[in-house]
Length: 410
Length: 123
Image (cartoon, each protein chain N blue to C red):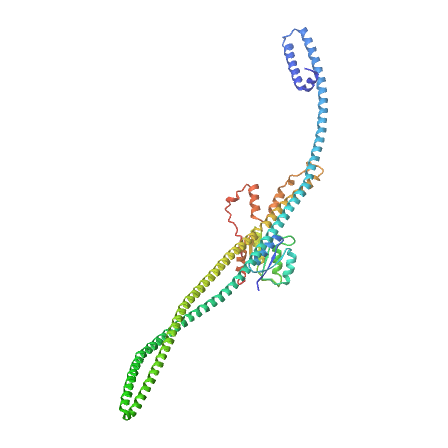
């Protein structure tokens, strides 16, 4: 136990001495200690008291000194902390400026990007519309061509039908001609036995004329006249035979002509058969061509329909992109609200940092008024919902409040 | 001739979105990103319908409606607000000032054109 310990624990030492004195009093005044020892005891006790008094006085001085030192240190500490707090508040200003600049850049980038996206999708839409217009134009042209081709094909078919009818008519005429010629040939053939009869008659007549001439010669002068008659008869018979030969020749010529004509008619009939086949082939080709053309036109129609569908899809997608692009305006306003909050905080911190004595801060200088001010500036339900969820602890998903319609006409 | 729609909004994204949507629907469209200039224009030029934002710098959409309604050119022209504003109080104020309808962003192209066809039949 040293002196410094005693100085620091004056109360404990004082209590010990007081106990000591009470004990000495009880011992001396109670007659427990013989009188000569009482004096020594009291003298020792007085000495102890004197020393204690000295210690108390010394201790009080040291305590005062320490108190002053502590106060000095405390003042210096507060001043330092105040300064640090002011510096902290001042440092918010560049931070707020930086955050504001970042947010503004974000806004601008998003705005430019949204505009660019819209311009591009509009160009896509424009191009697809132009493509559809060209396609439509081509389809109309194809329709005109189709109409013309169909007319041509209809005319061709009509002509083919006329040709077919003409061919049938001609076939009928040929048939009639053939029958007429066959009839003539048959009739001519009937002349042949008649010629033979004439020849036989002339032969007999010649023979008779010869016999008559012989008999006339025998008769002499009396038969002279008869001989002339017989001669005339023979001459007539020869003439008849010549006529029969000419008739036979004519019949032969007629017969040959009829045969030639019949051959030509047969050839013509064979050509008619070929013509029928050709006409059928042409008709089939025209029909095939017509069908193929119609198929091509249908394919073009289908293609146009598909293109229209695709362009319509592009158009609807573009309209959706245009609608969705409105998010940029909504996001911009939300970011501006955040910027407004940063600006208010910055202004508040600036005011606080400029106060000479930080201890004079009042309770109305917290940020609750800024929060309220932000709330008043909300324009969207989403902002209000976030605020209520974070600061009021409300569960906005369970809200009974009916949602307002997005479109109201008054 | 196609109907003329005048659109006022401080956001160029919104102006482009609405202009393109309406032009694709067959309307003629003029846009303005400054409400003060818009009021000046609408004082002397009759249009068939006006679409305006509400929260704009310089002059808000409600003031714009009041000024347009006091002009002679577009006193009876239908005015639609197209805004993020969801406060019933402002909507009521717009109605009182003579707005024809209140549309909250984002609005789809189909909804926008449907509303316009309803207000401008035969367009």
